[in-house]
Each structure stands twice: as structure tokens, then as C-alpha cells.
Length: 141
Image (cartoon, rainbow, N blue to C red; front, side):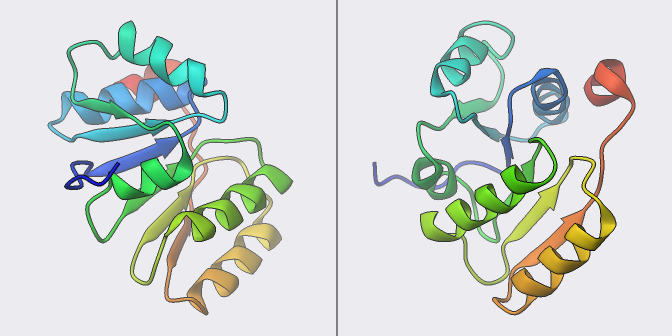
């Protein structure tokens, strides 16, 4: 799947908040790459809520990373704790590299955020712990 990267921003996690943040970014002129662990959710989202918008689906994390312009800007909206660490490790294996930015939009405990910041900084990757709140409407508008 070698192609020119098109995504300005990537988001992992297509629950209500993730879907609405993607739609918000698309409404503001950004091309967004969407990924979900359950890949069928990506297709359903693209065929429904995101239909006709500047949203591109990814079928794997490698596909997700390859579709993002450098430096890659990607947000995780997954359950706090081990899932965040698991996705960070999977993103590193999928090709995330120096100067890329990973944003944790979940409600991670600050010691975890501090540990992740230090770990990723040692690899030249920027990490932002930024819990997103405001609910569905806040994410969308």
C-alpha cells in the first residue's frame, strides 16, 4: 500500500468522542486518518457519519502511519492504562519515528503520562498527555 501520505492528523479510537473529534477536524479543513482496533468500525464510520468528508480509513497501524504526513500528528482516544502503552508500542513497531507527535486524549493518570513522555522523548518522539472532555457535543463543535 505504498502511497503518498495524505493525512494531516490521525486518530485511533472510534467511540463517540473519537468519531466526533474526527468530524470536527474534517469540518475545519483537515484530512484525518481514522483507525480502530475493530477495523469493521472504520468502514462503518466511513460509510455513514464520515461519508463525503475528508476522512481516510486505515486497515492496520502500518497503514495508519503510512497515510500521515510528517511529522505525523496522531491522537489516541483509547481506554487509559495498559491500552495506551500497548498502542504506543504498536505505533513504534508500525513506523512512528523521530519528530512525530503522539497525543493521549484519554484520562491517563499523570505518573503514566510523565513516564510515557520520558520514554518517547528518549526516542525523539513528542508526547502530549491531554485528556479530552466536554462530551460528544464538545468534541464535535
